[in-house]
Length: 338
Image (cartoon, rainbow, N blue to C red):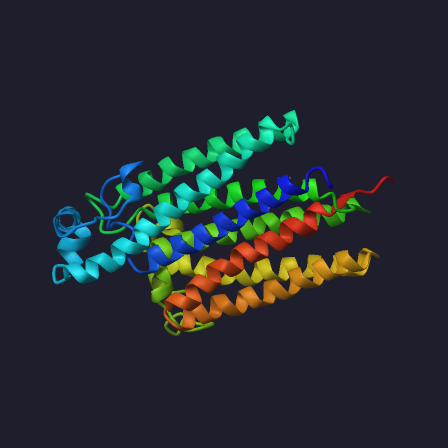
């Protein structure tokens, strides 16, 4: 571990950068800032408008898109600067995250600190990160002509890719830490992977909920406008589109899939706590179970407060924290020798 400690630390820092970037993305979405920059300038986009003329140009470009024309015609230049800031900061942080990935990699590779196997894995992750930049613009582009917001499909793709990259880097870092892995029966590990699958689907439906702004409707619990299953949930033809595009059904799926996922994770955390003898593994299992309950509370708070920005951002942070703890617990297990 001593030889790989700097590499592991670097990878954990990369995870931290991606974590912050996901939260900035949530703020950008919640403040309706994502369409404020209408072009993608990889190099010159590092700098915001620096004088009045440049600000007027940027504002003028925003005034040509449907979001402004239908919803924000009374927006002032000062208000535009606020939403521009969040989108600019999100993009800038993405560039800094890419630099944090690439620059140390070159240094560690040149010094022989990265094995060939790990190097190839990291190159694959870098390729995904570069693709993520294109996906980000692909998402923004969907809201510049026919729509007044980005496509929820593309938003889910963008968030999903971010969390995939985060998970791959975290797993690589955990491998380098070299923590002792506890042998357990296959059924216990399978329960963990099932938990990860449910959590992934729940997070993706959270992205569709956010993309449709479904969290700002039906702000009661457990009923939705007095009904368990809202009447408006199946109004789109063809019917299967409702699953992804009907805000009533999308919220219904997310609001009930989340506690089901939490129960599955809690059951796994209890089985881990009851099965593994090592104190540190039991502590990680307790942390996982505790975070699952906190995340349910954050989700309910987000719903009841009409997706108030601070609580909604905390809800997204909680999802990533829960994903992190689940991966840590999974990584610490190995198949039983018997």
